[in-house]
Length: 414
Image 1 (cartoon, rainbow, N blue to C red):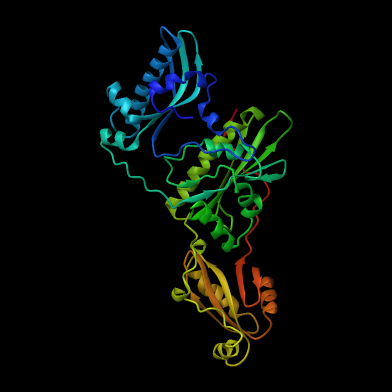
Image 2 (image 1 turned 90 degrees about the horizontal axis):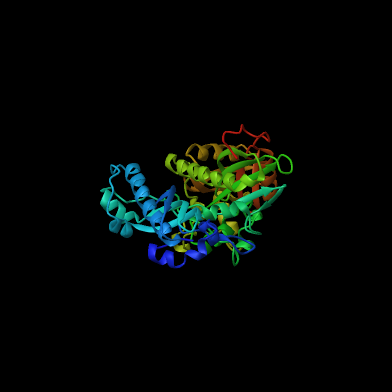
């Protein structure tokens, strides 16, 4: 829950006596949690205050005033503004929200840990810095949690999805699209869908959520014994092919620290995605884009029954059949190597790339003397995964399985 202004907040102070205001926004529902606001505000978290006043409301008001001042000094130092203070009236116009992380309210004393959100454009103008933020194209997020060997995404509410709902993404260079778990989310965004590489259905889902690509942050929780340490293995994955961006482990001493474990994991996975975007390894899969209209398509439609014989004669000199092969081309070298691999198969008369999409999925037309099922068998024998059948197939190299051993624990909490 976000408090917009100090006077309005004090009028509803009784609603926040238990603290943890952010959690109040994501409670409720059995299948998911609504994400907190992801506006592009500057956030300063963990500001501690301990003040006294004539009444509880006066102490709280003074505590929030003090938090605004301390947060502004931290933000100014962080952004190179020198750490100078401004008037309370100016701060009131700059602060867009107060987040209550933890608070204790007494008759004449207020102790709390607060977060302060500053309007980006106004704060930037006072500090004399640019407020431009370079962000990625919209990325649909499907958090997948494995606990006790069972995987869940939005089928039911999970602690991992709640951690992503709590995370403030305004300062990230990744434009996350975070579903709440309501409506059709449980049907469309499940663990099974994350395992399907078919682009057609992914295009439909991404269009439903207004996204250009998909990210699958995964956590696997291992409980050492009841009430004992919990190890979380985190994986940042991307795209319909479930490509691995990075992997790390975290550990807490007791199950009470799982929420902190997952919050830390979300932050580090976001860092991995941002780093991957900077070095170019996280790019939108353009095979997820809608196909061009027929009049603008590069490749002709497959031959109809009336013209099949004529087209086959042109391609193969009167023998064999024409097969369209879709294959991944992350680099130019993959084109020649895949063409050479196809030409080496007995019965293949020619193999030529007819539609090139570097970084995506290209198309190759293969003239083959024989049954398409035999071509599929020959490709599988040479280490390819083959999807589809008949005269249109999709191939890709079999990915190497990750070793089952856990990497060393590199961060400990709890």
